[in-house]
Image (cartoon, rainbow, N blue to C red; front, side, top):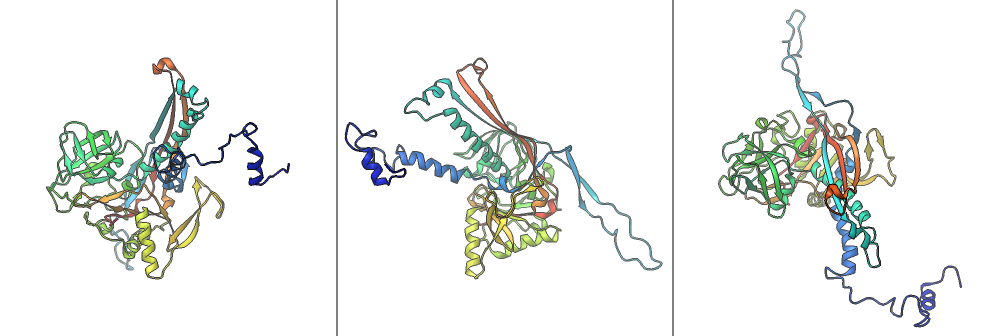
Length: 448
């Protein structure tokens, strides 16, 4: 018998008769009781899940932003104003410029905890390894828990920060269901009354229903149709949307009670970047909740704002919808996206260009473009979800600071659990930090 028989030889030798056949007479037949187009089919169950994992667990921003050790700091200082009149020409006998000082702002940053739990009963662990079982159920849950943990971190990095509510009550408010995931339990949310910007009564989120869009908050804060709800204190990681927000960001009024555009007074909520970031420059990234199609001028102006503020864009983050629009725009004008090796950095260490651990990305004006499925979306004045936002970032000043790397803890104390279960926990202690708000920008209110 040859060492490497052909498929035909192998089948012939393995099906030499009913009694000598190890696999049985029909082992190579398609099993008709497993179908492709039903939820119980083996192809759907096996390969469909693999595709779902690939499509719904992409964590590109988390992978692209550099990670650093937290260090011995709980904050730092940045300059927001260079002063006025402190520099000018002086004649031979002229007076000196007026003495002025820089405006220095303290930035505090403390690590946030992200946790993911899972568990399996003792009975399921035993039976899953018997014939017909799924295998090591605890290992399966552990693997899925790891995927979900990183996915949660990625979603928090891309969480939106301010939306107009479509309905409200004493302890709840409603946003489009696809937007609800941006609110996390423990977030402090401020209200912005329709027509009266700046109301800052805060409430802590206690529950989020991502299927209906209903967000439950503490009592004492009443929301109504047309009010704004913006997160001024995160329970989880700071998001890119938080970093690019500027005071008086123009948002849409609701389609019901207040249709006029308004500006959130983020200063009173204590979470804005004032008017000293790239995004706040002429409020260029907003369009008062009115959808507009992406065009090259919008993208060029965003890049210009970053460069005028002394930065150099290193990464463009956008949703797949805007990526396809950008590709069509460039193809129509016979301009094509380039390709560039984007190096993944971990602290001061980076991969070599061209290695298998790097990512090959499309580029615009030499800036790598990163399509991200978790990219936040704007909401129109009629409560409709618009297209995804675009972030233009100078990643030299962005970092994910890690105080404690991801830890795995397993507990088999049946008495403490009061059940025969094995429980597992992943947790990470860290925070997204920005050391220069001037050079981060976003484009919002884009059509899908």
